[in-house]
Image (cartoon, rainbow, N blue to C red; front, side, top):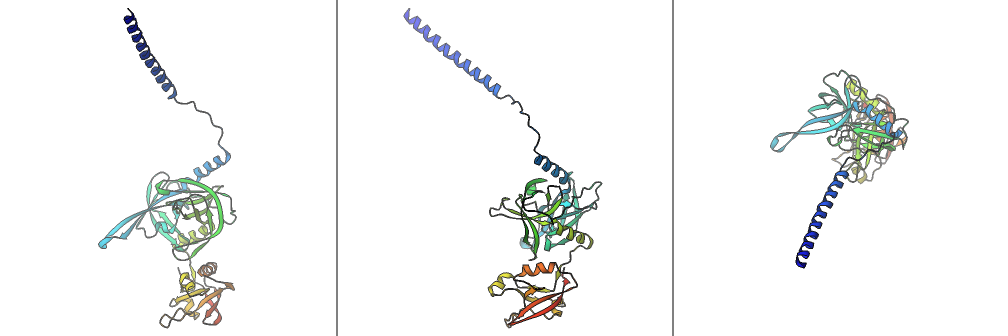
Length: 363
């Protein structure tokens, strides 16, 4: 009888444990079902004023920003030709379908396409370019029923610390917005031509590959610059961005539309690069050679005599202002009026002399 009671006791205990296991398992399932339900949404308050402003500016400016695709023919192996694709940003300038971008975005392209806000891609033709300012204009081949040119501001009254927005197409991601502040003004930006763009805007707004040619906008939604380059030690967007100031853009673009080029003040000389000049221990602009039939030739300037290994003329001042390097010389030239003479102080050997040279258009 005791054995039967023990057996029954064991069975009862086992059944209790099994029942308890299933009971607790069911409770856990029920809890999981309860926990998996959608959480109740907590209402948010109104957007902050700065958020509303940013959203409003983006919504107003984004339709003016375009995505630019290019195809370039490049030399391949064994004399073959390869097609290389590129991309960048730009913005609608006027109701005629002119688009402004960086010169380096469309340089050498055999085909240019523009993708609009609607997603439609339209072929574009090259109108003109100014490599000295890294600016170019293309035009849509087909007119649009509605065009929204970007509002244009001024860069004359900009201040360090004011908010800016950059819109572009980085890494193929269309209409990306980044924000920041103006971190410096009056920077110099070297271009592929060897000349510096002066008065450049420096910003900490992220500018990535593909942003080039896109607009830099102020808190009033106006164009204040064209994003053109970034310097980053890491190679990422966490660096210093630069934009060509809108006052330069507003001076250059109308000329590109009207004439296909922008006048390039010069005197008709090729200068020795700064590294070679420094190696000679010379301060100033060393004339490497003088172009035939130029104003420099007519003024009697001379370049280096490589056969005899003798330096020719070195420009040490322009209009009474010392010129320690090519950048100083070019900055003064860009402000000069074509057709008017400028005064140079020139050193040849141990002799200093004043030379008057007429500024010419070398574009």
